[in-house]
Image (tube, rainbow, N blue to C red; front, side, top):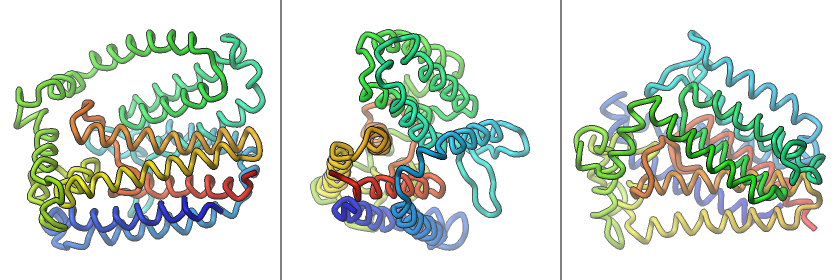
Length: 358
């Protein structure tokens, strides 16, 4: 398999584990009287994820084309189940989790990979029709939009954005007409405005993005504290473990805003290295897709790489104030369970495809 790709993932995981410990130790001591609470769980998630990645990397990629429909249907059922009171768990105002013993899973994360698998198989069969709006482009479009709306019922805008952008990327790679996407952009703007108007907190996020100082202790608090973390980092940072923002200034710094702690403690150099590692991962992933043995492997690999790349771009853009807060984790670096494990499983598929490269 592509050992450069594998090595990049392990390096990013090691950096993520170290940074989760640094960013979470104060919170863990305060909440659970155990500075190692979050890092112990992160090590469990990362270890499980790496084992799962290696296991999946030994499953021939063409196995997935046979079972993609059942996987996709299972993901839809999980998305529906999470909306049922008593089944879905509410965290941060969103019903996005299903409890499994002491742990929990996020069905929307499974749907991202399920959609890539299903859409890759669909495009192999219908690529010749993808330029025809009604016969080739419209059916997957209706399915994508329907599932996006299902995710938004939770609501989970960040995951929904990654889901829909990854799906559209696959349609674009398959050869869909640019004119069709212009139509989508028009409807997308209308839909985005309706989504914002339907929930007042989204309006607050937009206004706080434009001027966080209008409400520095409310909606603008998170982005201001993130910038306060990045600014003092300078070129080389304040040193590993020496962050000030993790002392209850930046909310849950080990999750969505872990890149701010990286920039504070490791400086511009540290942040640049992290971004460079992600760029190298994307480059190796694109090479796997270019040299894939068939269309299904090509669509599947570029879908996985695109999903991770889009999530990285959204997260870092939020942290440095380029786009409004969406509530999405940084792959391989943020603290997490189902998200980290499933992303590593996705990379396992990518590693398997790399074994068959021409």
